[in-house]
Length: 541
Image (tube, rainbow, N blue to C red):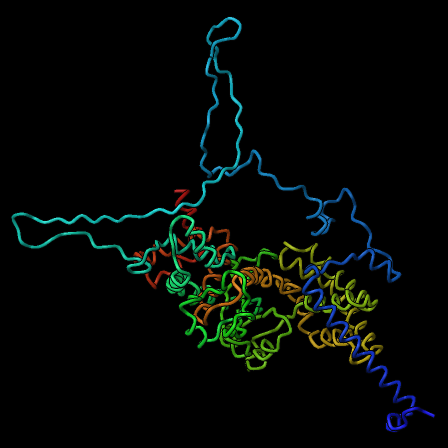
C-alpha cells in the first residue's frame, strides 16, 4: 500500500501515457543540455567549427577520404595548404616605397694595416631593417599676409581663407581621417585615442572627438549613398545583420556631457549592462556586400552598412527597394518578407549552407550524434567541390556543380527526409533537419548559377571588423552615432576590399570635398576604385 495515496491518486496508470511522458521529459532534458552546452561553448569554447572528416568517417564505419597525392599541389585543399605554407618573411624584400635612411659604418683609418698604403673601396654589405617613427602631431599654420596701398583708399587686400571640414575647429582633414580610421578601421575607441593624444600634451574630451566624427561623417554621407546604390544595382547581393547596442535617446541627452554623443565606455572597462541608470536597446547594422572575384566577375567589390534602431523586416525592404536579383541570406524572416512583399517576383533568396552546417555542428559537439556527424560529412563533401572550383569562371563552376554537387544534394535531401521520420519531433536534431528542408529550394539555388556562393561568408567576413570595434567600444551613444558608425565602416571596408589605403583616401576625399574641387555632380570620381585608378594613371603619366 503506498505511503501517500493522495499523491498517487491522480497519476496515470496507463503504460503508454507514462512512456510518452518519459520521452517528453527526456527530450526536454536533452534540449536544455544542448542550450547549456551552446552557452558554454559561446562563452569559453573556440569559435572555429573545424571537424576531422577522416576521423569522423572512421567513427561512423565509413571509408575515410583518400589523402591528396604528395606530388600534386592542386589536390591539396585550401585549409591544408594554409597549414603547410612556410611563414611569410619580408627580410631583404621590404617595399620599395619606404624611405631609406642610410647609416654608413666606415673605417676611421683607411690605411692598410700591413703596408700603410691607402686602401680602395671594392664593395659593400647592405643590411635593411624595418624601423618606425612614432606618430607625431604637428601644427599647420596658415598665414595670409594683408596688403594695402599707401596712395589709395580702396581697403586691405588678402587671400580668402580656406574652408575647413569643421569651421573654426582644430583638426585638419588628415586628423579627421586618422580618428575615423583608428576607431572604425582598427577598433580603437575614442577614449583610448584621447589618452594617446594626452601623452603628447593635447588634452581633448571624448565629446570633442565625437563631434569630429559626426562632422567628418556628415561630409562623407554622399559617398555612403553612392556605394549602397552601387551594391543594390547588382544582380547578386549578400545580406546579413549584426546587433549594435545603442544608448536610449533620453539617456543619451541626459548623459551627453559625460559620454560624448557616440563613444561608449566609463573608465574604459564598465559594460553597458552594469552602467547604473543608463539603458541601451539593441539596434542593428545591416550589411550588404558584392564580391564577384571568386568567379572572375568584373563587378567592383563593396560593402555598405545601414543602421536601424531595431530588427523589423521593414528595414531591409527599404534598403533594397530598388534591388532585383538573387539575395544571398540566412534564414531570417525579414528577408523572406522582402520576397513575399514583392509582387514582381524579381527577388530570389539563396540560403546559406554554413548556417545549416552550424546547426548540425552544435548538436554533434554537444551529443556526438552519429546522424549529425553524417550530415556534416555530406556537407563537407559539397564544400570540398567548392574549394576545387574557386577562382574558376562561372561556366566552369556551373558545369562542375551540375556534374558533382547536384547528385550529392539530391542524396542529402532524401537522407534528411528518412532521418526525420526516425527522430522525436521535439529534438534539436529534428529541428535542424526541418530547418534545412524548409529552406531547401534556396539552398539549391547555387546549383543553377555558377555566379552564386554556397554560403554568406562573404558578408560575414565584413561583419567581423564591426564586431571587433563593438567589443572595444561596447555600444553607440545615440542613433546618430550608429549612423556615423555605418558611414565610416562602409567607406573604410570598401576601400580595403579595393586595395586602397583607407586613411590616405579619406584624407584626400575630405580635402577635395571641403575645398570645392569636387561637387555633387562628379562625386563618383571619389569612390575608392575611381580614386585608385586616377592615382595609378597619374603615376604612369
